[in-house]
Amino acid sequence: MTTLSVESRRRIEAPADVVYRCIADQALHARFLPPAFSEFEVISGGVGEGTVTRFALTTAGRTRRFRMRLAEPEPGRVLIESDTGSALVTAWRLTPEGRETVVALSTAWDSAPGLAGVFERLLAPSFLRGLYADELERLDAFAVALVAGDAQDG
Image (spheres, rainbow, N blue to C red):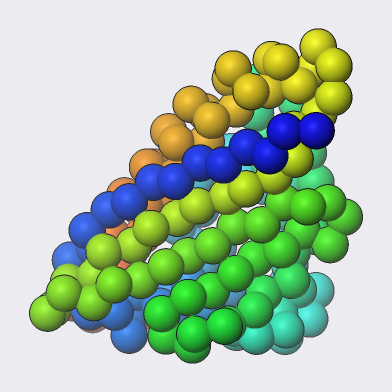
């Protein structure tokens, strides 16, 4: 089995504490998810470490369901989402740069075996890079609005 990984980065025009809150607080996070995500629900917790969520992700006409557990190995800087049913792990890494924040969003997972895995290795990374670019753009707009008072918490 081959491990695949994808990463997207973006400079967010908001301070790291605001950006991290947008990511860690699942009520806020749900507000900037791209349309490919659906059925988002908080199962337990709601903010940061130990929170469990579930959602569906539709790609190329196929819907996959995930149940993610959140961990904060470096609160305020790194948030990890691990799928409880597979090896898929998504990491959010924040680097403060003055009143802005560079966000790196990455995912690693084991590809499917056989022919399905060949197609997955060819198509999934490109799709996810586009999806993550969209999500980071939405995060930027949401965090900027939050700082300006144009968006409400929770």
